[in-house]
Length: 375
Image 1 (cartoon, rainbow, N blue to C red):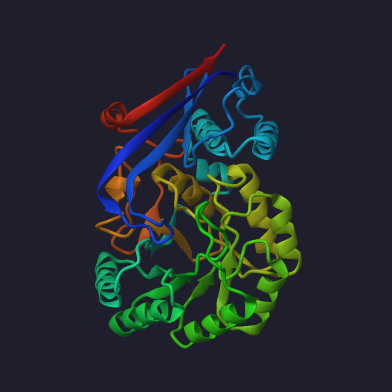
Image 2: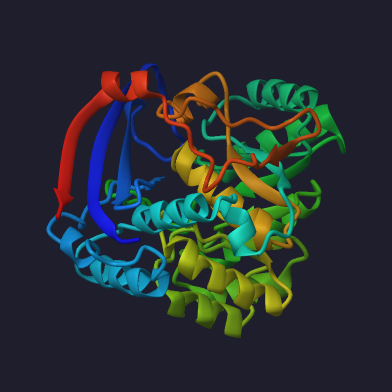
């Protein structure tokens, strides 16, 4: 089998009403998705998504004519492209989807096959009043969720803590609560000051009193030593690493025990091939691997396959904050919208590969660009 062509297509979903993402200065009125297709002479096509694939154009020839199973070679080339041009890790996901289809098994079985399901935590994205967040938390309990994550992004962190207080008062011990401080990285327009170690310690101690399960990204993602100091000084778990793009970042964080929970996203930094190695490395030292998954439904699926295959963490992120961020919006390119079962588990289907079934009608409706490079 050899790769005969690589195709990328871009799609744009209008959002009406807009999605008021906590990390954006204005509500989002559109949601973009880029799909990459890897075609072969055996008639098998792998599909990946989760990032914009900026940087692939002009480099498709490096893969055409090659064995799709030469995954270490392909991963190295994608890493080279990442260094020079941009992130193209959905191509790695498409290759793992292709390999699973060629083998006739779900991808998670190729990766280790530890289990076929994992508990999800509802990962919210909007800043709403304490009362509204508590109302939504109660609905999560009714749906079977065992955990949720709350975003911090108020001008005064005390207002963020009030949201956690109201949710805890309302749901008691029915939900584990995670908190995402969103201090690890910045959007292009963000010039606000990030937290320092003293503030992170203070907030962590407040959240300990509310029995918060973990505090995510309380410091900039490159401040490894301060993260290690924070972890040593507080009892709450410290999570991060979702946007660290280089393997050496994780080697250094692991060396100094900077985090309790490592969160590299296969769609954004390393693909399944490299993130699997990072996960095994940090788990060998007693930490957890629980990837960031906030891209789209295909990116979520890819992270689900790897986490179910090898992770020791009890929870996986599930981007979900209805009505603003629904399954229908997140998974609009897919026929089957991913959802937890009545017990809060994300269950992997027995379909070969990543189990992606595309919604052809939606693809035709929302396509905006198409690029095809073949033999």
